Amino acid sequence: MDLSTDIWGQLAVEASQVYLSDGTVRSPFANTTIEKLPDKVLLQIFSYLSHREICRLARVCRRWRQIAYDTRLWKNVSLRPEVSGLHVGSLESLLSLIAVRFGPTLRYIELPIELITHTVLHELSGKCPNLTHMLLDFSTAMQLHDFSEMQAFPTKLRYMCICLSEVIFMEGFMRKIYNFINGLEVLHLIGTYEKCEEEEEEIYEVINVHKLKSATPNLRVINLYGINFIDDSHIDAFSSNCIQLECLAVNFCNKVTGSTLKTLIQRSKRLTCLLMNGTSLKSEFVMQADWDKCALQELDITATDLSTECLVDLLTRLQNLRFLAAGQINGFNDTVLKQWMESGNVRSVIALDLDSSDNITDDALSKFLTRHGQQLYACCLSGMPHITDQLWMSILSVLTNAKILVMGTSEKLGVNIHVDQLMDTIASSCANLERLELRWDPDNLRFSDKSQKAIDLLRVKCLKLRCMVLSDGRYYETVKANFERADRVTVVRTTTCCRVSPYHLLSNYNDLIFN
Image (cartoon, rainbow, N blue to C red; front, side, top):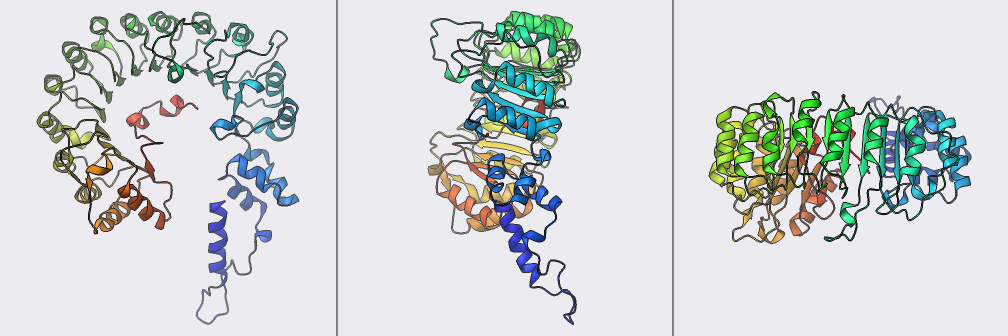
């Protein structure tokens, strides 16, 4: 609604302006009212709104209702109200929507557990022949619907995301859809990592991965996120059948130890991205893999217990690495950084995340970034109390190509961060900056009455900046107000609800997005 308000305000201004000095020709927008706008313009305006807002606008008049229900506005639909989707009160209402509003233009749909029935899936397969992306949310399920009579399922799916339940076994449902999903290229299985307690009484394998892999031979991207029963045997199963595999993510699957990494690397010749954040990798298994013979370019080993010896062995053998996330690892120290540089394998790296790597000294980081900073598109050195604004001030002039920067720690520091000078330097050095996060505690930020000038400079020079995250406090309010006055209301955010990540630079980032 803000967008339409801005447009009408602009039209009012234009209507009062005269383009020629003699006053004979007025603006082409003179006397324009909303009723005179053509349907295609209204359709374009509506396309910027959420479906909730579109439904409200449909009540204005008959013409707006007709435009609001144009199927071109309903290509991507979420029916999960808890994540900003629409609430559908009954199965009958949904079946009506599928028949009347969605139709052949529907490409993507998200369904909550109460709407996942064989009748709905049958209607989607018949009325929405171009449906290629689907999310099925079973996460809150205590009981599934009866799928014994299901005979149809969308057949053109290229992307499927299944949010698993903690306790409901999915095999009855999966057995019905195996024959329809062999064209899948992207598969997400989302577990209940965030809901788990430290000690689980019993772990259920609620979906049979070994059968699933046989039904999906064309997978390029597999994301197994936060699933407490996923282990190395499941990785081995996928690698044995998915010869097209490019990206494998097993973040927060804590039973993965890496015992099948050697086999994975040998089989998956196209594998370029491997994400293993929060797994239980063992150094001996990692060192057994033939890293010098693989095509791997992107690696995340954050929050693992790999040893210094293992890290040196790994990084000195990976020859084409462009993305490395290796934060929260005690074994990552100056020795690793030094030998990695000496191996020459840093030459292609464009993204580096060393969050909370306390065993790396600021001197070692300074030398590394002075030498390789110019090639970095992302540099994340957060969570380290000894890395203050002094180091950043010395290296920012080298980070001229940086698009993503994350700095600071939420811990209380004994020194102050002079943020005005830091903003000046960022604005002067990083014109390509798109995402910036300052995690420092508000009590450690020192700024003056002239800080508006520094913020203005950042806003004017970093025109590509789309996200700036700060800890909630007085400085956050100052920066937010500055950007809002310049009509850039979505840029400044708080660390409470937003975090900046180098994942935006992953080759398969768009395929990895879920929820």
